Amino acid sequence: MTRQSKSDRRTFLRATGALSAGALAGLAGCSGGNGGGNGNGGGNGNGDGNGNGGGNGGNGNDGGNGNGGGDLEDELIIFQWTDYWPNGFISSFEEEYDVSVSVSNFASNEEMFNALQAGGTGQYDLIFPSDYMVNVLQDQDMIQPLNLEAIPNFENLSEMFREAPYDPGERRYSAPYQWGTSGIAYNEEMVGDLDVTSWETMWSEEFAGQMSMLDDVRETMGAALKYLGYSLNTTDESEIEEAKELLIEQKELLSTYDSTNFTTNLINEQLSPVHAWSGGAFQAYWETYEEDAGSPINYVIPEEGGVVWVDTAAITAEAEHVNAAHAFINYFLDAEVGAELTNYTYYGSPNEAAEEYILDEILENESIYPPEETMNKLEYIENIGQATTLYDEAWQEIKTA
Image (cartoon, rainbow, N blue to C red; front, side):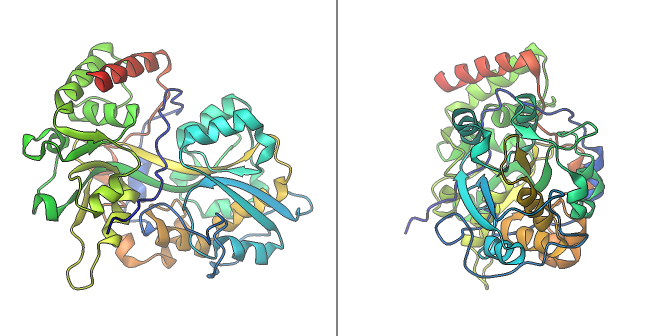
């Protein structure tokens, strides 16, 4: 029986690319930290997007009541990725704070951005953009700075996330929610006991017709650039050209470019190996897991390195329920609530205080929290300015080759 995959959360074509720095020296200090869940990046709620239906997850009050500094409104409107918290997550907040929460979902940063442009930022209070999108939204005056005094649990974050390179400056516009990586996932039922160490695997004729790359210009160009030994944020025209030619050479070996169904394809033994985001790979792992046999799904970050990303929460510029939005951020930054999230999503948690509540099997999983050597080879996707045009042109040539 075919199983349906969850919606992905990384499909925005980073044509606007918008990160402030790419160095990850601080990330190494987080290895051996936290992570968790079922790997699809979030909860499934009760069908209305609100996550109601059981569970509690802490009181969200490690350091205060976490409101915006004034009276707490009785309503909160959230725009969030599909399936990104466990059952009962929203209802617990509603009960704790006596706030009625409504949740709408999006499947990509592009969809979120376009919705805000079309309908105005006032239609939502709290949104969940990815790292690079924070800069885009800030530049467009679509989000407002956070009142950190109203978010005492912000101190629960590890140092690397309190000083995030994608949200620089004296004022913070976002609070980190979950983080993950990109790499190669494969199903042993299709490829056997495969020894994956390099991006070279995705150019192997042995797997012709059964591989897929992410349908994302910066992710897939980034994989090729890393394979060639270059930065995935290079603006060197000759390096971009070399990566383009490598991907054109690879294309005849691929089944498709896919950012939405790679999890389902892994589970149902339709494609393998695949270029994947870590959470989707772990979702496939748990959906195929059997107590006696384990799972045939594996996830590897190639030795050349790859992408690291962070999903965040931000308050819209025209939010009507600012205090409730601050309270919700403080809620998910509570140590126990943060652990509940990461024990569900199998993405890394930015919440250092949550470690004591996170499952040991997650804390010790190097595919979720890679060792220092690997972390130092990962990069955030940065704003590459005018070079964006070079990437877009290269991508069009690849797709039409």
